Every structure is written in structure tokens, then in C-alpha cells.
Length: 106
Image: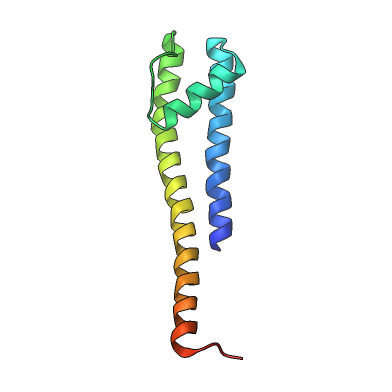
């Protein structure tokens, strides 16, 4: 799988998980869309300001699974994105170094 495809899958997975959380928390907690989105992002990035929190047992159980899955998805996604960008920069750097040492091939 090419680097661009891996990055696209990683971004899609992260975006999808945030959308799922936003829909879930909007429905379960009757939060506004903005509050639900904010809670989803704050939760999977482990920020957790504490200004919003689940209020029912069902929400607490689902948030527990959301956290475990979301933190994993975000870590893997950010690793894939970062690795892909670093690999591209490394390739470009090595190509420039090769060209400067050995001259450009025509």
C-alpha cells in the first residue's frame, strides 16, 4: 500500500471515529452537536477537561469503550500520518543529497 493510501485510510479512520462519537454523544446525552464533537475530540486525545462528562450508566459504559478504541485509533492514525510525511521528506532529502554529490543525471 502506498504512503498516500495509508495516510488517507488513517485520516478516514480518525474522522469516522470522531463522527461516530459525535453522533453517539449527541443522542445519549442530548448535547448540542458542538458539545458532542468537542467531547469526542477531547476524549480520544486524552485531554478530558471535565466540563462535559457522561451522566448515565449506559453512557459511561459506552464512553469506556469509546476511549479505549479511540485512543488506539488516534495513536495509530497519527503514527501512520507522521511516518508517511517523514518518509516523504527523507526520500526528498536523500534525492537532493544524491544529486548534489553525484550531479544530476540527464
